[in-house]
Image (tube, rainbow, N blue to C red; front, side, top):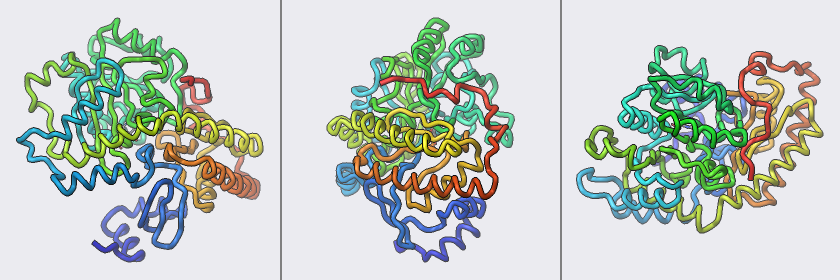
Length: 440
Ligand code: PLP
């Protein structure tokens, strides 16, 4: 199927997709059509070649079009891409088995869906089925997706308010404060759901000991612990799963993004035998037509195999250190732009002094043909989540281009008198300033 021309694409975005989105990306200099990608390179119809440091918000841990993932998907495509839904599905069984092998102990069963928010929805429903309680506590600035159940746990007023009322008994506590979490648990609470590192919240690392404390509290209070590793999973943080930093064994884990190997959409809700008990009695109580299709499961199995055979978590730890050190050196040179650089593995946030500054900085980085983006719940933080496989020489090239972009940003800030921190965002609660967290 041939792509429409550049002018048709823009016109049809305006007329048939979403004109607001077109304006948003045009402002950042990104109003050209993507046509091709491989590894960390994305090419556009107007002949530009970007180094991808957004990585599909954590979907390209293996890069774009990794040959091993392509081979697995192509082979399955030639055989049977989608399930009959009635017969047994070998790739689904294979993926569920592989997930049970690599995830923390006790997570033995999987339900496969098509996206992160679907994986969260399944976890919310299974928590209710298991405990009989409707309440879920998550953290301020959490991001768990935007379908109605997940959105009830995604605590950002601009996303939640237009859709109120949301789910009853969904509570919010400051991220990193175990005492506040314990105090918020009441007779309605069935589960606590947390990201080990808040991604869209602005790359906020769980303070040391927090996940362990949450596990202890939830166990003692008879509440399920759901770890949302949609963004942190599959090697991103320097471990296969970020829960491993503290050896935490949750009752459920949700995965998506890179589980599809950067080639297929997928979501996975992985849980213990206890969580699956009632689900096994009524296996049709939660289903999905496309969830668990052979094509996506083949991609997932190839992704897990690659994660292990290439020791990608270790590479993420090493590459992340290089990037973090380089960015901190840049922060020292441009302290008027960068407030803090924090992160773990290849999940790095550049915290600027205001949303205006971050927008200007992003536009300048894009001018240098590096793709970066702000975090959804905290737009003054720019995220870098490149493929874990990025070579040291490309990381060094990225840092050089960031240097040029920072110089341009600093000059423009001076020209426009842009130095005031954004008071509203600065005042947001939580341990945002802290670069102390999960440790290697
Ligand atoms: N959970 C986390 C931690 C995420 O970062 C995201 C998306 O960014 C989601 C859930 C929702 O995933 P999706 O956008 O695939 O629905």
